[in-house]
Image (cartoon, rainbow, N blue to C red; front, side, top):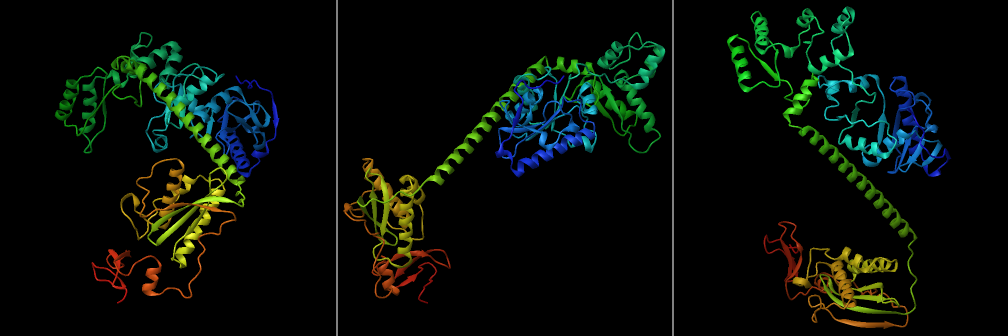
Length: 554
């Protein structure tokens, strides 16, 4: 019986949900309702379909209380949150719709849509003993490994506990058959047998239940002649199974396939005897199946289930409880993971909003700074870091000595970008982490003083300034030979030290090498050889490779 969720009816309009993607989701879900109605996959107003709102992990669409599947339209669908609040729409959801669907979506984030239907054929399958589906054809195999049977129906879902239990029972499955929703199971008995029993007056529901449970018609109420006619496979002795197969095999060249059914109590010797008998009877093959030897079998009886329970020594219930507990833990993990994702999205949104509001600080007239000398692969570089009135880094100016050309342009670009970052509130060490470790085809220094590139030298200078501000000794980074620090004070805005006066003519050849900090009196690393990949060196006025003989001078 349907019940409305005990909350005030809502007539809400949420403009944030007027996006095209949300409306398309409404249209698609309403189409599913109409299609299900045309195929008879509903029952009154007690069934529900739901789908998560696109772009949201906390809101879902569901049909309102009081409307049948064929009456649901896109505009009539409700948008609810996991707390039972109607965010958009007219009316309230049905109570079981909320407690089942909200918990499914909350605890199983992968379930972006959930359909709860009372399909006639599926309901009948759920009322049968044994697995509802036999993997006997391609249509059934489409669902192989995707189904689960819920045997623990606890009545109408009037609270979140039943919804959580259903979500836990799903595990990794996509389709759940819920048993006992009608409070009964339907025994599967031969239709002709039932008709004869009714015609002769010895039919009863209790007798049908016993036959379904035992898998045999050997009961006092059943006349002897009908016991002989409606004999079942388990009542036929294994040797007669082989004799029937041999009778057919005698007149057929092809192999005859027939299963020899054993009871659950069969032994290895019983099976061996049948194989030997089939060989002596000139059968070309034999199939043996022991009842209850597999967890799921196409045809089973209550006796099969009882035997399996005895075989497991009661472990079946313990295993079921363990699976249920495992499902609940997985649901909790999924819920926590979902909450973590929502928190991360909220954090990213907050950071993006903060970044959009961040503005560059205005520059005061007077700044105090520190200049650090660093050797780089492109020559000696002076790094000037200025501070604001609170002692925080404010700007960065770079002077690359006599480098000139593109190298000086790169240095000025780095200085401007670092200054923009510092004036916009980016932490100094975040800038350091981006620059430190950038390598090039040239390097200078050894050990902790090794400089891989000009940006790497800037990162080292930033780290040195920060450590000295923190009062940390810099035995490894501080070297009298390579690093000299001197305070600089300016009463007027300092001009970027990156500005250099161009020479009358750009340096050429060896002069270019000397201008970039490379001595012509020694051998200096100049990158990699285009022929063999070894190190190039500037020696005797030319760039050479001492491995393969490559020379830029010809």
